[in-house]
Image (cartoon, rainbow, N blue to C red; front, side, top):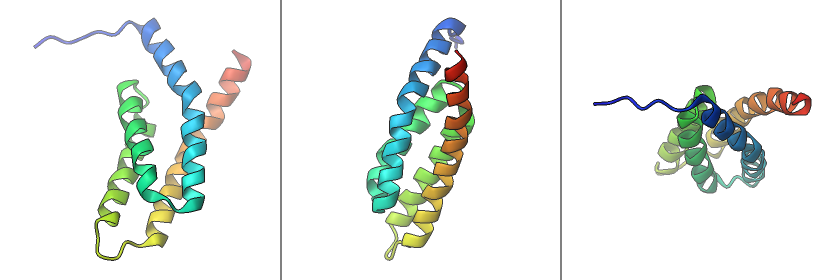
Length: 110
C-alpha cells in the first residue's frame, strides 16, 4: 500500500476555496435552523464533514459528523424531539461560527 502525498500549495488552495464557499453553507444552515428543516440540514452537514476532513479541517468535520449522525438517529425515532434536534444544530452553528470568525479576520488581512 502506498501513501499519497499532497502538494502543500495545492492543499492550501483547496482549503482556501472550501473556506470561501463555506460561508454560504453556514448561512444556509442558519436558515434551515430557523425553519427547523433538520432533514434538509443533513445534506449540508454530510458535505461539510467529507470536505473538511479531507482538507485537514478536522474539528469542523468531526462536529458536522456528530450532529449529522445525531439528527439522522433522532429523525428515525418514533417521535423525534424537536428540542433536541434544535439544540444539536445550534451547537454545530456555534462551532461553525468559531471557524468563520478567525477565518474572516485572516482573509481581511490577506
